Image (tube, rainbow, N blue to C red; front, side):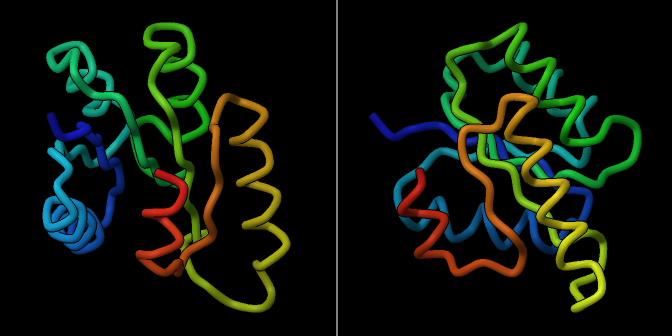
Length: 124
């Protein structure tokens, strides 16, 4: 049976692209635009074993989401991703700070956007 992944990102194009690539690799994929939607999916879909979440999102950000998932579904593996809203040299350190904080909040793996699909597949 294929592993089930929840992709959480407020950028619809990225969500759809990740879903397409992951489904092509044999994963079953659910999508959410923010942390609130993600928690709803996790309540309804017990088979989700991996969550890929952006950090900066409206309604509930990825750090809050990591904390909530650790409390409610501790067995779910979490990959936190972030580009800091805009990839630039100035915010590179800020992105690293977000990702390290997400790891302290419960993320198993962190990836900075943009990342190669092969890098994501290795951590999954």
